[in-house]
Length: 454
Image (cartoon, rainbow, N blue to C red; front, top):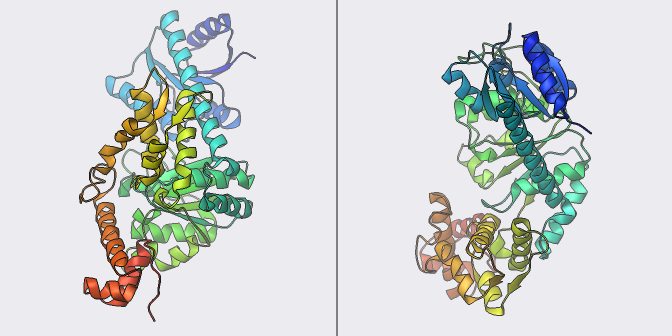
């Protein structure tokens, strides 16, 4: 079936000319003369792509582009004759794939459209593969921890309970959240927002939306992530980084099941399954006054912990094979020599699954073309992440400063427990610390110990 292209321009001559050109190339076309008409089409039945004029009567094409949900419902090629360089740059920043000046040559416009469609096809294929890999049965691994994780997801996904996914950086928290969404049967979108990646002043409008004029630069209504995830799932990643004032507003949204956009307006009812994720100890953050206790208990209706890769070495080889297949295709042969497998299993993987993925990519790049083999030589590719087991900076470049300190503390605790044959009281005497405090640190850092304080 030919692809449908939405043309948005207030000049009938442009609409006729571009429509004729596209129809001659086998496309179907639909036209709109205003931003309101275009928004209605995009909300009702998104086309394969949009060719958008910026100089529309009333609401501009740039304003329309700014208020569309993210990701954009269709790739956008901007077509304009009077736009300034700043407006062109702003359009590209807002997600347009190309900017074509009027009057366009046929070759230039068709090339821009073909590139936009090809880029969206690639993004759709990547999304399909991500969703396929995120199916609960396809979460890669053979360890007891992964088997149990798949069972837990299958059990809780069909419910509407809030889920708190806990795990170190790089363990795959977003993939677990996607698996929960896919197994839930919800028909809406999976929407993810990283609370640590968005500046605090912008985070409220990003989550809850904003009305036109709510703040400087708010030239049109902005739909927030909660509304974008209507009937679907919203992942609040790195929830521990949410500022305290926004924590109170998030709690109110979760309790009342409605959002109020920044700048007023009637509240909007929402039907969204919320999954929160964090690599931090939220219980400790509550004790330290950095996280609201009431929000913590509201989010942690059903906590799911993802074990770090160093605790499930049996998953390393299956994961590596999956990453290689993703990079080179499912027919790629990967040979793992005994010494290579020993090195992979012995590696502490401070960056967890993300670090293993990076290792697979290094292996792919250094052996392209050529067969992929993990032996003593290729295992040396792990060296940049490990340096020396005795080094205090063995995870430098992979871990944050806080994670480096925690990993160094784990090493001290493990060595003290090893010398004390797993006895916490003896380890406390060795380290000259209070036994109860030491045990709390052991639990907080996930270090194994034989006994508990009386």
